[in-house]
Image (cartoon, rainbow, N blue to C red; front, side):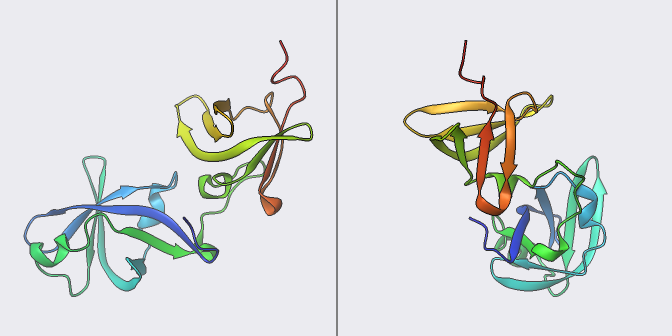
Length: 163
């Protein structure tokens, strides 16, 4: 779960090599956002970034004072967080996945559930909604009438459940 002032942008994977370099599993659509990091929170502790590398389509990060594989391994599976104010800017009509998760979904006045996950399918995202049953809702303008992030509500088009 996200705290209001921090956002998760990645997760630490395996150590790479002997010098403390770590593989990063990006949890953002803006992978370039790692390139200019100076410091980042990992597991509740702040780390200075020594360098970021892109190798073979993967991202690797080296923190200052993490100089061995053994110490680096202690960070594996921890999340990388930055202040929400440092989130990459979005275009109109775009939303962060972490803002969509937890939104209540409405069909007219009736609540049908909450967004538990956002599935990336390639062509469009799909909201995984859990209510009385699990419903998969394509994130398309023809299906979604309105997204109100401030109130954590999503409204479906009137004819989504109609045949």
